[in-house]
Image (cartoon, rainbow, N blue to C red; front, side, top):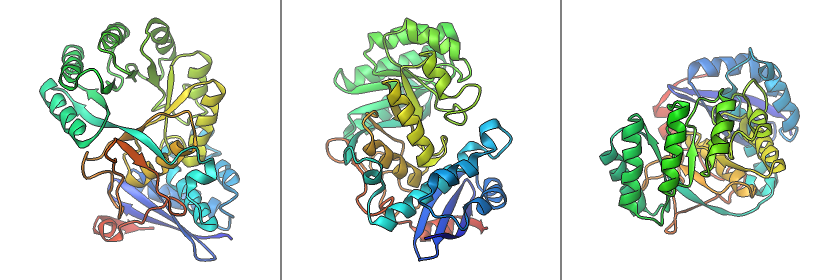
Length: 351
């Protein structure tokens, strides 16, 4: 089996990567950024994929990322969709869902609902109540109102939802060192489950100081370039014990292959790897397969509408069940079908 074609369907803010084999199998992945990334994939990556056996995914991954390990290549998130399409092909070739190929630790996982940036406490409470009523048992704020309003939001959501629901806060790297320490101590009083990305990613020493000072788990590395390489990549955080929980996903860490490397690295340090939303429906399906294959991840991050699910371009979106869990698809490969009518209605061009 060899890859005979790589097709790129370009939308304004994303690209559908389609790989075809000489025996008729088709695999899909999504990537971000639209036409500029698609043109780069067509010129830089296509030649590294065509003619390859998809089961040689490590060789393909290394060939694709050879330049990016040292900088100067494509944006790192450009490769995730190609790698996910490879795994989709592999699963279809053997008639098994990807999570079983990766280890099959479980077939469902609890989900927490995550918001976009919300500044006002009243709006934050309304969104939290909506998620709770939809069945979520955990909720993550992205407070964006500055320290005082952020703290007011965190307090208001805890008061509104009570002591039993798990809460997390992610201010997206907006605090000074002093604010991060103060906020962490306030979140401890409110019994928040974790404190995510309070500082900018390159501030590894600041993270290390914060993690030592706080009891609440400090979470980071979401934007750390390359996952395993770079000036402030995951290994630097681990050896300094700068975070208590690592963040990773298939979009920003080089597809399923790259995310697996982060998972295994975290396992070697006896740490959790909590997967962050890819903000792309098909890539979140890929995230779910990896989460269900491994044991050192507790949650699936759910960023779609609480009721309608995460679903752009999918015939069946990801939804939670009555207990707040998401179930990994059981079909071969990714186990989902694309909704090409929707995709084609948003297509700008194909390459």
